[in-house]
Length: 250
Image 1 (cartoon, rainbow, N blue to C red):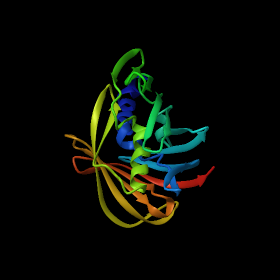
Image 2 (cartoon, rainbow, N blue to C red):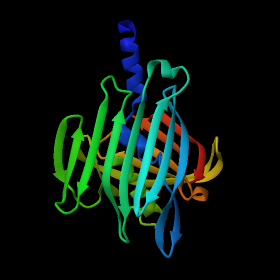
Image 3 (cartoon, rainbow, N blue to C red):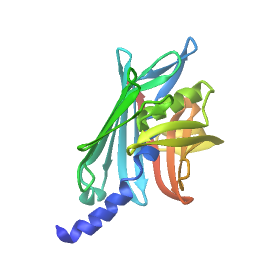
Image 4 (tube, rainbow, N blue to C red):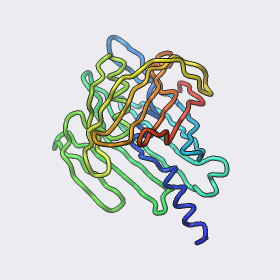
């Protein structure tokens, strides 16, 4: 087993990309309007993932119970990659939507692909205007500012604003024990083909201020702006691509 450890570690580094850039739109909701309000519909959306030739799948789901939404992701390797990349990455985000904005409540992540299992929890307290983050045994508090999200609830806020034609140029993300400024830009529109079908899609660029990494999300109007392709670039070179394989309402 020790002989394989350097290989396993290298492949895990390739497959375990920046979770914010990857998950930001992967569980993007289908959105409809009702009396001028955005409504998120329970659904599943699944993707085939390739990270520099290493294959994987991402299964996503959105449910709603008594006004509280729960979004979940499960990332895992497929094919021969499973020999080197055992385990999965599971993430959940809970949030509510008011008349004016989306408010995150909590976020949880369990990473069993890492050499050392990693767990993350984030809780947002609006009465005290504080947040509490735990990474394994380490706890951090932060100021719960306006326009601040975890990496999954940020995606829903972006799509909600896009549907309302009110997409902001900047959003705040709490990740890795710090608040990051995320810049958003709407790019071109074109026809995109994926395993699930062919769609006209609009490109949205997401990039952390000062970072060489950027992501492009191709969102299909016909699917209520569901992202059908997600591309991640590092120094202008394609690093990861995810394509929609199935989608349906629950």
